[in-house]
Image (cartoon, rainbow, N blue to C red):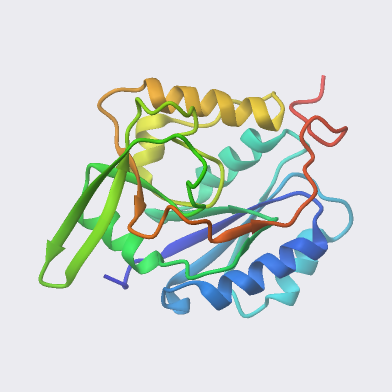
Amino acid sequence: MTGELCTVLVVTYDRPTEIRRVLYAFLKNVKYPHDRLLFHLADDASPGNYIDDVEREFHFLRWTHTRTNRGGWGANVNAALKVIATDFVFLMEDDYLATGEVNLEAGVRLLTKVETVGLVRYDGVAGHFLTLHLKEYKDHEGRIDYCTIDKESKHLNVYSNRPHLRHKRFTQAYGVYPVGKKLGWTEEAFAHHVRQKADAPELVILHDGIQRKFEHIGTSRQLSGEDVGIRK
C-alpha cells in the first residue's frame, strides 16, 4: 500500500544548519515513494527569511507551512495539524537525523489495515521500560510484524514527541497538545493523557523499532530562554 499521500511535518525553530542535514538524511533513508510525500514546515517564528530559505533549497519538494508567534511546541504543532489534510502524518523535529531506514511503507500499510492502531513510533524505544506485545498482520501483500506498547508500562513515555507516523484517528481520539508551557512539560502532560485515555487507538513499533534510527544532533533548548510557551 504505497498510494496514500503522507505529509512529513517538520517541527522547527531557528535551526538552519540542522534542519538541512535532517531533511537530506530523511530523503536518503525513507522507504516510501517520494512523489506521494508532502512536506509541511511548522515554524515558531524563526528570525529572518527562515521558511523561504528552507523551501527554496528544497524546491523539489511540495511544501506548505504554518507560523506561530513563539507560542511553544504545542501551539506550533497544533497549528500545523489543523491545516494538514492527509490522513497520514510523519512528525519529526528539526534536529532528529535519520541514520537507518525509515520504513513508512510498512507503517502506512499497518495504519491502513489495522484500524485499532493510531500511531507508529520510529525513534527506537531501547532504554525505555516499556512492555511490548508482539503481533502480526498478514494478507495477500505479506506480513507485518509489530509490537503494541502497553499503556501500563513502567515508563511514562508510551507516547513521545520523537519521530512517529500518525493516522488522523490518533488526533481525533487523543486531541491536541497542551499550550502555554515549556517543551518538557508539554510532552509529559500529553504522555500522561495518552496513558490515561481508554478505548483509544494503540501506539506501536514495527518489528525493528526497538533500536534507535535517529540521532539527536541539536543542542537542547529545554529550560533555556528559548524554551517558551505563550508570552504574557
